[in-house]
Every structure is written in C-alpha cells, then in structure tokens.
Length: 489
Image 1 (cartoon, rainbow, N blue to C red):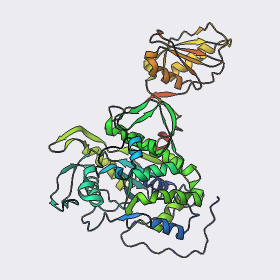
Image 2: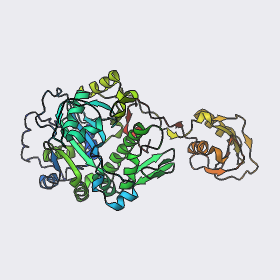
Image 3: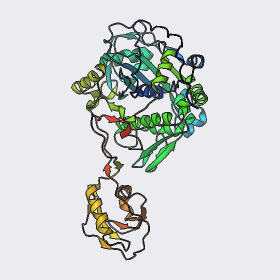
Image 4: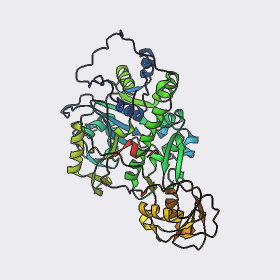
C-alpha cells in the first residue's frame, strides 16, 4: 500500500520537554535509515508515515512503562545523537509449557538481562552503531537499594547482567553509564515472548551459516547453508552458547548476524508500507515490551519518517574489547574484564558521534567456510571434452587459496554435466568448504580416497567463488557492518 503524502498544513508538533533528546529533521535526499535499526532491535515499533497519531497513540498505550532515570544524579554529559540501552530479559516465566519443551527453556527464570546493547543513532540519522556488552562482564555497581530485599548496598562487584536482578532497569542504566560514561537517552526492554512473536509475525528471518551449528542445551541444530528461522528457532540461535569454544563471545557474534538479518527482513517485507500489516505486527508484540516514559508517540512518528530509506552498510556492530578472559572474582566466579584503554576509545567514539571504524571501500563478497582453503589439497580433473577446462579450474582454485596440485588431468568420463567434489568422509568439512567455492557442485563421498580432494569439472562450471575461513570469536571483536554479516554478503 503506497504511503500517503503528509499534509503540508498539519498542526505543529508539541515542543520537547527540557532535557529530552530531540530528533532534528533529516536533510532531504540523504538516507534517513538509522532510526529503523532501533525500531527493529527494540521490537517495539515498526512505523510508517501512513500511520497516524490516533493509531500510534493506541499502540503506544500498549507499551508497559518503566522509569529507569528516576532521581538519577551526576550523569554523564549528553553527546550528539541518541543512545538507547536495549536489554533482552529472561522472560521464560511467560513461555507456555509446550514452548519450554520444544525450545529447551527449562529451569527457573533468572530475572536478569540475557542481552545488553548500546544502540547509538547518529545526529544526522545516517548511521547506527550497536555495541554489545557481554553479560559476564566484570562490573562495580553504584550505591543502590536492592529491589527485592530493600537493603541498602554500597557499590560492589557483580557480573553486569546481575544488575537487573538487584536494582531493575535503573541500576542497569546507572551501572552502564558509570562504566562507559555514555549518557543513556532511552531504555527499551524485550523478553523471550516479544522476540518470538516478532519473528513469527514477520514470517521468519533468514540466516546463513558455513558450518553446522548444534547446541544440545538450546536444541539448536542447523546444517551448513541458508535457513529461515521461526520465532522459537531464532530464540535458540541467539541464545546458543555451546556451539563452539567461544561461549558468550560467539553467541554475541551470532546475535549481531541475526540483528542484521532481522533489520533486512523487517524493512524488505512490506511491513513499513502497509499500515494494516504494521498494525498486526505491533499489536502482537507491544504487550511484551517495556520502555522509559519519555519514549512516546512523537518519537514513534519520528522513527517512522526516518525509516523511509535504508542502507545496511551504514549499520555497524561490535563488542566491548576484552582485556582479560576468565577474571576470577570471589563470590561471583569467572568474569570478563574489559580492556580499559580500548574500551574507553570505543565509548569515546560513541560520545563524540563518530563511526566506530574508519571508512573502507566495499570489498568483493566473500563466502565464509569452515576450513581455510590453504589447508585443503585438491586434484582437478576435466570431466568434459572442452580443452583447457581443467587448467582453468585449477588456476582459479589456486588463486582463491586452495592447494591444488597444479597438474590437472583428464577424467575417465568426458560427459560430466555437473561438477563433482569427491572426498573421503573423514574430510567432510574440507569438502563442504571446497564445494562452497564451486556453486552448484555435487558432493560425492568416496571411502578410502584419502586427504586429497578431487574436483571433476563438469559442463556446468562457470566460476570459482571467493571463500575465506570463518574467523574465530576474539576478545577484541572487530567492527562489522550490517551488509558484512548478512546472508547477501
């Protein structure tokens, strides 16, 4: 449904209360997409200009309100742009028993934050920077009153996700501001229920993986390739911590990939141009979202107007640099201690409204694979009557990094239509990595073939795709852009 034009003689908007961050009109002709990221991440609003004040007001009324900024003093100085603290809470107490069993959500809820992110929206609305704060980060709380017991506490060490259990949204905001010196302008909270409903209402979200992802704790079980995940499956994907040895850091990397895919799905599925679809999606999810009292209808309209254009390459994701893994704290256990110098440099960029990484030209798309091509030995055979095809394939694979023999031979069969990757089952991961470089090729297991893989070039051969080994999760995660972590990349 086309978006109706705005009336030129609409009433002037009410003024913003003092101290509340304003959203200046974006310049004409520039991509005003960045606020869309927050809208999608918060699962609170997916607005379009076709939705009027009356509809938004009714939706706004469905959002549960919290006051995370009450009586807060000595806060950091406000910078340029807007900072939203986005938290995902453990809301398994709202999950049905059938969903608990299917998605492995057993156990008592911890009443803590499962995910913590700072989402920075640049003042010109052309960039969104998302910084993940590991939930096991070592933190020291400000003095506060325990929400459960009413006991007054001095500042003390905790894991950052435990701040929510002790002092709710307010202590969470205060702890994050104290650690980062970044002033938080808005607070948005999402639980398991709203997350699952949002994904289902959007018809699922597409993610891709170069390696199998299996986690017995969450039940996640994905084969290499592209998958469209339902709400429950998406929850398994973003919660999995036992897929590899990277634990929480690996999980945050998958969360970043998923958020990029979620933004892409929400902005390309017609939701933003169809007021009826927008209404259905928002009504299904807003009942499970909590936000600060200052996040109101006017903000929703501003977000909607900013969501008219989108460039995924302008979104950027990173994780706070870690200085010490497994930092032991008595009574708390193993924590992650931030690197003070690199973390301060990161948060300084947020405060100064600067990109997290220097601009770099977009490189050619590269497919991530399980095994480094330099570790894979390959013998190429020409399975056609086309002279020189074997040499062409061998040269292209070698240029991509595979250890070819450099001496292609003719296959016994000269009528091969589809390119074949023949491999010993013991080298199946290498075979999948090689097949990823040969679009449309057939994997064929051959027991006893040994460590050298064989490529039989068929009549369908067109090109060798660039591939690169999947980077392991690192303590100082690099900055990546949305287009670099989506399936299209």
